[in-house]
Amino acid sequence: MSHPDTHHTEHTVTVDAPARRVFDLIVDVGRWPETFPPTVHVEHVERSRTQERIRIWATANGEVKNWTSHRRLDHDRLTVCFRQEVSQPPVAAMGGEWIVEPVSSTETRVRLLHDFRAVGDDPEKVAWIEQAIDRNSGAELAALRTAAHQAEARADLILTFEDTVEISGGAKDAYAFVNEAHLWPERLPHVAGASLAEDVPGVQTLEMETRAPDGSTHTTRSVRICFPHERIVYKQLRTPALMTAHTGRWLFREDADGTRITSVHTVVLNEEAIPAVLGPDASVADARAFVQNALSRNSTTTMEHAAAHARG
Image (cartoon, rainbow, N blue to C red; front, side):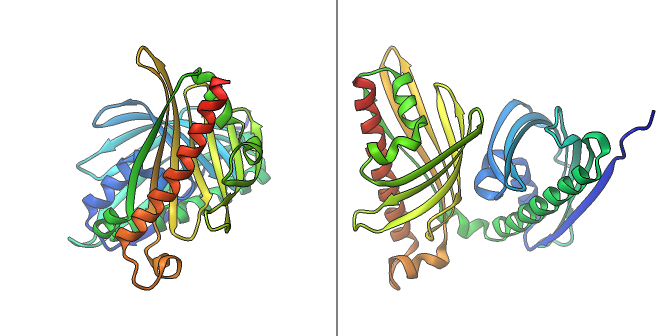
């Protein structure tokens, strides 16, 4: 009986940043959705300083895949080994390693290794996986280089904030309102159009046209991961010009203190776009205030309508 071939890939990048800073970015999977373009959402299942199990949702060749990986973190050797516990077709098995190598005190070489087997050892499946690895690894290493190089400036470009609305209805009904985003054009004044696809239960792709107070519109495209009836997390794959990344969460809570909806946003600003969007004299502080005001206004409007829907 023949055994499927194991295929190997390696991708490399040189980063103008200390090795420890680069390693810390690789370790901090909570920041991956706003750092790495393919990553939609990450959750810890188990964790310690040297080992962890994480669940990941990420795009691969335009499809959303999810899996659970075991990671071993070597803080002395600056390596992270990973292995998928149960892979999703067309992947039969996959693992690899991040290797962070100091070149100097200010320069680092990163090697990203993968080994994988394809379902049935099908050549077409092998080619699909190689293309996904090549595309995602290239995007991740480029984003890692940018994030590490701009770490100090990037701190001012990242903002996280939240808004909460108390409701008198049930959390399940409020969740349904947010989950049914294809009905938002009929229900929300700032949504001019929406298209929702859910080929896999709980994994949605939402394309939405949002109306600004001045009447102008912009289109975003998001992947949403739904956990009935507790939360919906999302990442915008297509963002407005003023952002390079935007992730968020809708949280639904019902306890002895009452029922409430919370909207959480994390945004990475596009500093280069600030003059074109807000004017030549606008600062990063102006952009932070503008983005937070716009997102908070729309989120609060959505939550208020969800509260009214739950009440009804």
